[in-house]
Image (cartoon, rainbow, N blue to C red; front, side, top):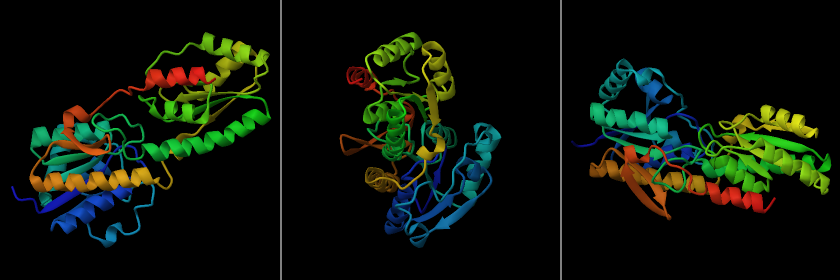
Length: 321
């Protein structure tokens, strides 16, 4: 089948660098003589027929912008067969021959359904701040999210030290402790709570009390949102230690902001390879970066991976406490 037009959508949670990915796919496609349509609001936009043509000017001056110009959403309707059929009908209506999906594991599973069940040519690009997809060392947005969280935590540390307080900082990570581990190590936090490991409150509080007796005037704990909620952790610590404990929930500030260079470059490289795979007729794949080289794997294999650095990071945080 000759590919004449590519569609692109961003799905799930947004992440810095998605615009750079869109720009790369659009301009590389146009340079290869292909047309490009953008689907607004991810799979839901595909169901609702929110499709717009994209050209060189459409993606001007977006490489440095956070978020995604195509918007994004999570679609329960796409999980139904009726929703899937409507999405496929939209692709046929606009003569879209192949689809690039930028998103996380849920977005990849949606792309896999389109490919395996409806034979839609698809390519996945890893756009998630959680960095939890297999076949890639980094995902688009993860570097910026960590740096954004670190900037905030550095400011909190100033207050924690000045006012001699315990602080609990909640970062994003529903099923993944990647951001929590990275910022805990990078910010010099004393403890971290993540979904991948059980957490011992008794040991934490013993450490805090012992440190307090030895003159340690501040203590910082980072928690991933999926492992424990910061208000609950702070309340538990206060009750068990009798020490004043405050909490901060960083929330969606971690998703926004100007993407750092690593995310822009990664998105640009992966977008170019996605278009190349489509030109070659190699579908049902996900692109990633592995030891600084482009890596291509089957979509089903890319959907989820476990952070192999968990125990190393936990040991370092404990050692450097």
